[in-house]
Amino acid sequence: MSSSREIKQLQKAKSKAQASKNLKEEANICNQLGELLSKTGDYEAAIREHQQELTLSEVLNDVIGRAVANRRIGECYAEMGNIEAALKHQRCHLVLARSVRDHAEEQRALATIGRTFLFRYESDQSKNSLKQAEDSFRKSLAIVDERLGGTVPQREISEMKARLFLNLGLVFDHLGESKHCSEFIRRSVFIAE
Image 1 (cartoon, helix red, strand yellow):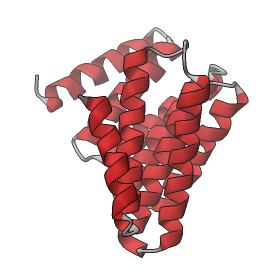
Image 2: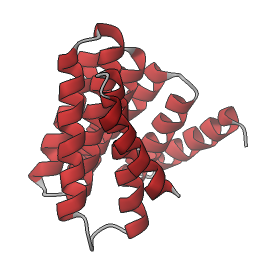
Image 3: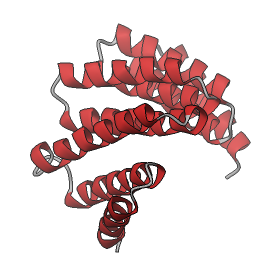
């Protein structure tokens, strides 16, 4: 199905949820719409959907809904190159995840913050950006290793680790530390196989 057709179907479903005053369903559809719009590169429209999702989640008192909406808004801002706005929303995601002790969301928040610092490095070329990315990825990895066993499927844990090792490999590649870079990428590939 084409993206434009999917968007129209989601907009129709959103209108239905609004008409029936089903706020939870409306928030869920806003999330899906925002994600789809983001994939098509329409980040501003995606942000509007995720902001609506955020507002609905606040009304519903849904902390994780608020956290996810902030993450998505931050990801859109990062794609648009607005790193400070991205980090503001991603840090809010982190605070909200920690407030309800959702370790999987905390891990995602830290990984997303790390990726945003990698984006920032592309424009500022500063070692500080790389060090902040490394710090976020290592904290995220520690959560995967220490807190997610038994609460998240093993396959998902493996995917998280593979992505984090790959991201750490990229950090060390940019730092010119080829030994560390090779080690992390090797570990990522080993898990992915």
